[in-house]
Length: 170
Image 1 (tube, one colour):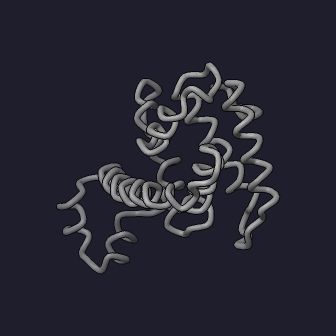
Image 2 (tube, helix red, strand yellow):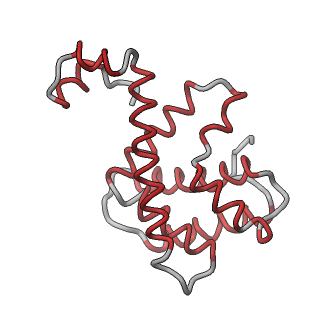
């Protein structure tokens, strides 16, 4: 996150700032490396978890997996924070790069069930609803199945019709 300094990171890792800077010359390079490590971990979990729900419709599966990993898991929430920060320092022409390959793969695999929006907009729709869920939860740690289900249904409707979340200018 934006307020974390290289000094704080070095202290948490129990290494010197000089060692950290030798490994990652800038805060942006550190953020990029951390994002990539989280992304690979999340991608592996999504792959494994996808098969936990073989009886469900495809969107229900990906929604359950994404909320389980990115909303209710502490490292998943950290990944989402990194995702947001990574997107904030990329120029607009590079925004396609922040679509996680795992989500892009799911969107390609289910393209026949989705509306006319392009894949980048579809990814932003899903991510927008996930962020809405994270924000709606606030600091509460308990699950809210009704909210998860309602936002999942709204997300699916937006994907089917090719529209973004309310207030999304994409």
